[in-house]
Image (cartoon, rainbow, N blue to C red):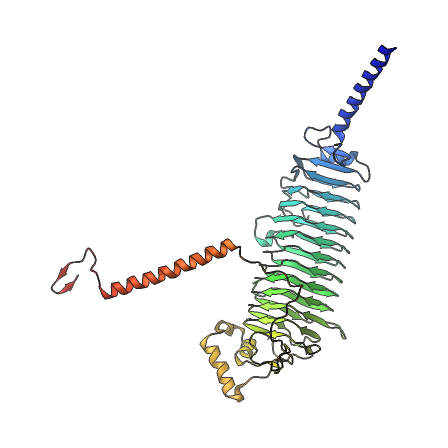
Length: 488
């Protein structure tokens, strides 16, 4: 009896061990993977795993390189770990999502095709509520393309554009007819555009869209929130067209220097709120064209910083109903430019006694309430001439421009018409909590730059002293022959 019990126990141990081994080939007890794919697993193909999966399954792909051309037609979670790669070898789209509620997470995707007609993409989504997160996209034509993919999330991805001429690149992130999407924490730089077209109520936050053609191009998309993004070193940082109820808040738009570009463009935009952004060192900080387009609508520029731009704000003569309050205009070549002949009308420059800060304001604040006691007026003759003849901008801050403005001050008959007047100019810039932080040089860099500057100054002084000694005691070259007639 005891021998029979021992034999049964041994048989049970063997069976359980076998079951554990088989289970380990399908899933990992330490993870939530329903199906495990790896080079040494029972399933070695992602496509095979998708075929075998049921709705709601989790597929974990552990390491290795796998071919592209995948179609996710079930609501699965496809998760890459240990550096899993999907490589298309230069052919077609890598992953096409055709079922709702799919998650693609943690992969390196590289090597799409090159067809603009077929829109070869790293990830093409044709279904609702997809989540595309934590992926690295390399050598791709189009990066992440949402097409009628309402309610999808694109988060914490890095898109590295194909190194070809900008006209031959695709868009890093393209969103088309997809409402209620979230685009957060992504990097899509050195590509063509980030596009949001015909897609309402998008939330675009904390992304880096730098060194592209359009950092972001938004068109026919109402109710968008664009917040906390870096839109720097593009031809155009952010261009918004034919949209309403757009909030643009807390973004950095700097060093956008296209010949006709700049930081922000508004074209036929209604009820926009532009608040707490930094516009620094752009061709044009912000350009306003036919915005708002509907009667009874106002656009608001609140607590922004426009600094060191060629033009702070450029406004078309037909533009009406824009309110500017709490903004800081600091050392722009031209704070406000009127684009063409005409007058600025129905533009509000102060609300409840609070106007804007102007770095060239020459008034005073006798009662020390933080608001100048004299209005700020834009009435510089050279600036007005530049508005009519933009090529004269070459002479900004030159003796010629200063002479022209001095003449206008000395002889009132030469003074141009007042461009605009801020009745309540601020005495110092506002410090909005929405403003993005200014990147500071590391301490080691500042010390190195300071030392280099000091060395340069000392070298200049030493060189100057050496030249003075040489001038005082000229030394004939070694090959010169000295004779009674001079040096030859």
